[in-house]
Amino acid sequence: MWEYHFDERGKWVHKRREPNPDYTHHCFVVARAAKQFFQNARFDPAQPKADTKTYRRLIRKVVSTSPRNELPDAKKVVIPGYANLRELSQAQEKLLKANCGGAWRSYFQRGHWRMIWPFTRHHQQKTAEALAAEIRSNRAPVVHLVRFPSLSINHAVVLFDAAENEKEILFAAYDPNAPGKPATLTYDRSARVFSFPTNFYFPGGRVDVYEIYRSWCY
Image (cartoon, rainbow, N blue to C red; front, side, top):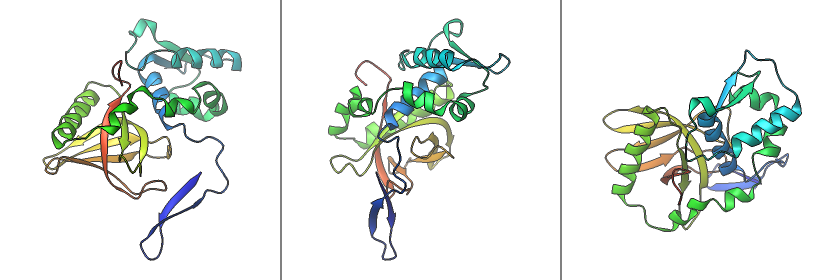
């Protein structure tokens, strides 16, 4: 696993991460699970905490639901003892990592076919508008951030908020690679371009964006 940064000459360089992380190449898996918990689970902190066997069963039940469809309230999976996914993740990290799916799901996500086709400015405008509308409807779209064919970024994040003004839309994103704080995916209305900030795995700049886990072919 590598991490990247600009050196003193402004050159984008990389080095091996130390210590080497033991959970890598799961960004699509984690983003998918986050959406499944958001729309198909209900947390009940008033209930007593359950045992490991119960949480394993409940986690598997949630991740077996379709991320493309939301369950009605009466059928949502109830997670006892925790108020939200962050609390559950902090207390049951190993259990979640072991039961949300393998890294192969990131490589074989069914929507990957879309990245090889051109992204027009019209397409990106419609995408930004559709994502903002979904968030206003209390949905949490998962998007693929990509530059093809360079693959300088090939990543999935979950969008959960959108601040709009005349010049841009600022999407708040949960980034599986950096879960400590929200990332910002920016859409420039004039240029009709998305951009993502510099971090340890991407030098920053333009990205092409499309939503995944939204229909049978994505």
